[in-house]
Image 1 (cartoon, protein in one colour):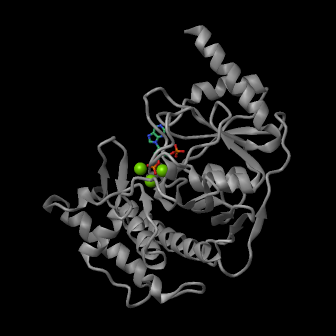
Image 2 (tube, helix red, strand yellow; image 1 turned 180 degrees about the vertical axis):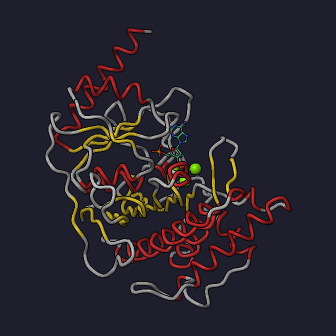
Image 3 (spheres, protein in one colour; image 1 turned 45 degrees about the vertical axis):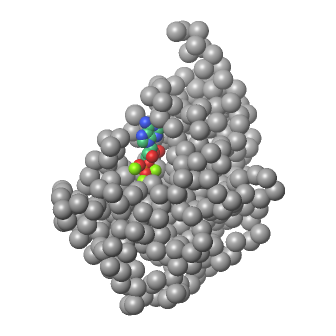
Amino acid sequence: MSYAAEKQVAIAAVRRACILTSSVFNNLVKNETLTKEDASPVTVGDFAAQAVVNTILGRAFPNDPIVGEEDAADLRGDAATALRTRIVELANATLTAKLEAGEKEEWGLGPSGQQTTEQLLNIIDKGKHEGKAERMWTLDPIDGTKGFLRGEQYAVCLSLIVKTEGRTRVQLGVIGCPNLPSDLSNPSSPRGGIFVAVRGEGAYELPLHDPFSAPGRRLSIPKLTTDNLNLLESVEKAHSKLSFNEVVAKELGITKPPTRMDSQAKYAALARGDGGVYLRMPTGTGYREKIWDHAPGSLLVEEAGGKVTDSRGEDLRFDLGRDLGENYGVIVAGEGVHSSVLDAVKRALAKEKQGQ
Ligand SMILES: Nc1ncnc2c1ncn2[C@@H]1O[C@H](COP(=O)(O)O)[C@@H](OP(=O)(O)O)[C@H]1O
Ligand SMILES: [Mg+2]
Ligand SMILES: [Mg+2]
Ligand SMILES: [Mg+2]
């Protein structure tokens, strides 16, 4: 299936959300960030971007469930009045902006797209789905919120997961990276891109502000060997075990230092040929990886000729609910090097066990 309609809607939704998040960053004030129960940050940008994307998806595909990271519970009380007002203002400004090429008014966009506060809170809550369905969207309105707050990498991440022939797989992935330089080795190169993949149709990078103007650049992971690649990893030490990555890099004979980057921009960079291996091993806290943190990125890399598994070499599970199940870590690499990385991870795990 080509998912042409879904792809068009998803690209338009991600583009609008990226415009919103960029404008929030430029105007973010101190009290516009909350700390969630798990101590992670969430900003007015995360909530407003989820409201915008869910509005568009809700209009275009009203029967599709959405598994979104955020919910509106913290926005409903009197204590949240200022935050709520700002989110409503941001979401409405984004929804009512004039229609661009490829967009439709019936998606809730354009001058008549104004929503009430209650409508916007309810549409944010449409993302509370349990994550088990024959067909569902995943949304991470700002992936890498900590990177976003630092002015570094973050991504707006959307995917469509469908069960076909007994297998629940990602069929469409769209990742907007407003801050990603077009040339990673040159931080002053132009920034911003939308990365798109449809299963069986390849992976593409499109211009962020004009994604419907041309077919975009087809992405293909170059054939790297362990002599000329380096690791991509999280900036945040709490998100993956960086000391383990050092051991794996040694096992593989990698000499180049790792590239640290927040969010699924790592998957996008790898799909483009930057880096070569994205390794995310659990820190041992029992945290379970979320489907919205990997669904679009994993398809993007697969469609660019790469492979994504856990540390046992098994496929990631998108059929278990909002998370991927027990956390065995995530290994992402080009086809040619994935098996060497997997072997090195297994050796490093065995050494770690011996050392205990
Ligand atoms: N203890 C933990 N282990 C692994 N991932 C975690 C984590 N705590 C939070 N995360 C996830 O890590 C994501 C960011 O990943 P990265 O380190 O690659 O930038 C966060 O996404 P959000 O920023 O959307 O909340 C969050 O879902
Ligand atoms: Mg978060
Ligand atoms: Mg995330
Ligand atoms: Mg997020």
